Length: 452
Picture: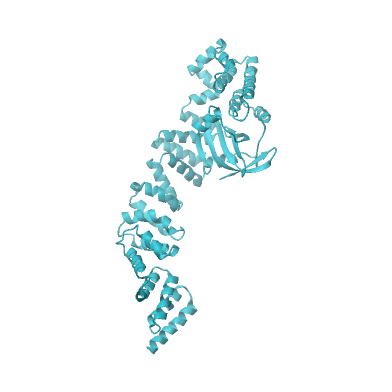
């Protein structure tokens, strides 16, 4: 979760944690919080505008539509980090509504852009005030005799306040009838004059080219992904992967593929790429649910890769039981061919849990496996004084040296004249690299043999 430094007039600099971001049309809306307050941050074409304290959103507002119809990305998605880090200043500023209007003029946003941006603040600024300011933009165009620009504002107002009498009058104004017809006909001339209308009428390929040309690469990736989710084809997937490979480092590409997997979990090329990525990055824990849900992708080569990955991960993953789903699949697919790997798995299991828990866990595996039978036998004899030596040998063979030592020390007390427990204790100390102790018990073993 990325940290956002937000400069506020009253509270000073705040450290916020980003929760999610929503992409819709030209807007990006990010939700973030600190320990006490939630904020909504607004971006236009990936450029930061301002932040407001989060309040109840009007369902029928433009912001309500953004949250309902937009593409949502969670806190871990690279889009949040990219949006935050795209600004050269170390912190973002929370500015007032009058400051926002001044900032938009300073940044040379068109009046159409200013009007569209103002509508997103309906849940935070009185609608009457917003309407007045948008209406002012309309009259600026009108006084200049720019009827095309004026009608662009009319179209914004029709979306913002369709039932307003002034807006209805403008919609029936005969001076705009020709322009209205041109919009209905999707006139090429209008597509050049009205950038919003151009985006509205463009195909996904045209939008992608436009966004990349304008430096709006996050929006380009977002619309390509949305198209892929709606039309999951090999061609669309190639377009998406080419984009993320161009704009994002490999570790972030995996996160983006995982997000895509949540939306289209049965898409074979995506599953193959995730498998390859998890194996290359040695992300065995991430691989588990993928394989469990898609065992049908396994072939000889993938099984070999899984074996290698599991063997390398046994000592790193705790508890070992987290690896059980993959191990079960391997046991099922390769009966009789993974004895060595499964033995290492059981040894790791025994090191991370007690005997009873190990037995309970191994009940999920075929009971005919030799090492499973060995562990179950250990459970049967653990309370039998006549079988302590057998138990100790089994612990030793499973590399559980401390438990083996306990068994043979007890056996030594029960059979003080028997050199065998002493020989095993010396052997165990040798395995533990405790040379001095090993020599002592070797001598004791020799002495007992001499006295026997």
